[in-house]
Length: 91
Image (cartoon, rainbow, N blue to C red):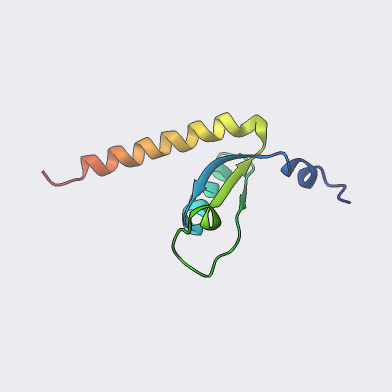
């Protein structure tokens, strides 16, 4: 039995992102951590580099009270990345 509040509360954490590759999940987690949003990556380790559907997905989890903030931050960064890509495409 765990006395640590973080372990106890992490069972109630919610998913804010899912990634087919561990590296993508790590990048998302790094973004959240850089904004002081606690997060964990859940997902079974896989010997295959490809996404294997639900079995190959890494989920980025945060406390419920930080989920909206985390989702907004992820959406903002995704929009920035898409805008940067479209601006740098050759005409």
